[in-house]
Length: 208
Image 1 (cartoon, rainbow, N blue to C red):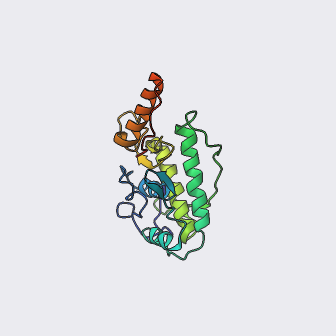
Image 2: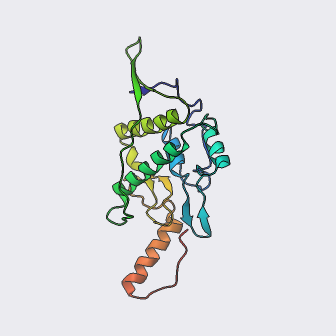
Image 3: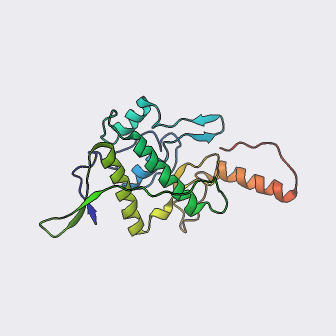
């Protein structure tokens, strides 16, 4: 199905971008999935040198992030957007990280109503049924829906380092990537495994 731009935030994925992806320097997903990834990279994430703040928590950073997608910063519904973000992140942990990681949280269902429209030329389009933040949430869900149909959703992942969990686009040929950066999170994990195999406890290692 194709998506109609009417009712969507008036910013295309190719030009959109809040501070989520840019603050981590990750490989960015293509097309509309870039928006999904950017949303997934807005929460507070524990990293070496201190916590990275939640961009949707403070009014000023939330307004800046929303403005990048054509939504007024004072629009109601930021809490619902955080709920959607957290639900998607939990579903990715369940899909890719089990049984390696279990934080006790389980995926939850999130509903959003969109309309299906038949155009005069016979094209069937999914049309967001709302405006503002609800429309942005529908745009995120429709992007995931399209990616699942295309078989590309499995390439958007969370870094397996539990102190990182940054959302990244897996460009590997067989979608085997598990670290957002193998030189940081990957090397740290491999060093820890090596020390554990040798039975030699080591000093605390940085996480990124």
